[in-house]
Image (cartoon, rainbow, N blue to C red):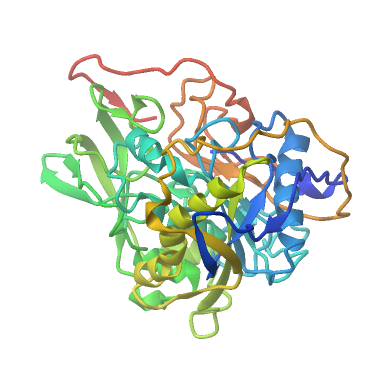
Length: 458
């Protein structure tokens, strides 16, 4: 999990790297009449090169935001960005940049280090709360395969996962292990059993004799738990049933973590979509919503006064120099995904939340028989622009957020065995064992296939 300290984006001027902003494609032989679609298209190479330091990360985030603002579409609560090419050099991995927080009592003070310790941070561009980077939508089969998940519904899952980060999860529990519910920053522990969630956790069947089996989940039907809904302001405290987390976990050594390259199952493992049977030995520790309130305080605003309708602006990023005919085909391919985002949120919140698409554009969509786009998203008809930084612009204070994400290049140098997150000295959550997102620069995967011995989860 990548976590850059929230203050890093307000201590220096913010560079913009944008080749071209939003557009409506011109006519082509395969096109029909202009069609209004619920997204805007940006032509830029800003998300191609992997950030090598905080400044290049800041450049990418602010570049996308600057490009969106130049489209003159409304500023949303969240910006949902999808690419047609590998993001930051890989088709695997998504990112979230938290910008603002308006809620107390959900643990966000462990993420936003504010002077009075309440975790509240005003958005520099209200109502914008965060940027979601979902990666290459044309390579969802590759991403799902890495997760050992069905591709059907996987885009839905990735969207809901990043959207959940508006509210963390970052909730603490009383006692000497306040981060016990968290697998790593902004994700529930894999061993948490609160009904499963796009934000992590699972459903653990008690087999007796200390054995627990992970239920196989489905990305197209995964919904937010009642604890999620409470943290989101969409459920009252008395609607949250007691929930549990497995502790002192012993995991099988012949079942590896698919996302983290076959390393041992741990708290950071993502929802279990695999058809591989997973049985662990563990104790089960129970919590109630009263424990959440004791450790974090009551949610403010409460469900009675909380926001229930949210706005999203969806962005499709194509590479600089992409030919018009290819842009049009990519837009047609992306349209069903974009149209399904708002209904997916309503379904996942059990009808309690509403998402409104506020950005749109007119695009010439080709007829369905105009030809398909290759799954890799690289069958472009035009040349690519270079990836060197053009002259920069200054947004002043600009963004003020962390960059959080799933792995895309390999495990950290410590082998990726960290299982829990605890508040670090900076006020941000940091994974035990020194997990550093900026250390994910490549290297060989560690694959565990060593028989039926068991290993205690770290």
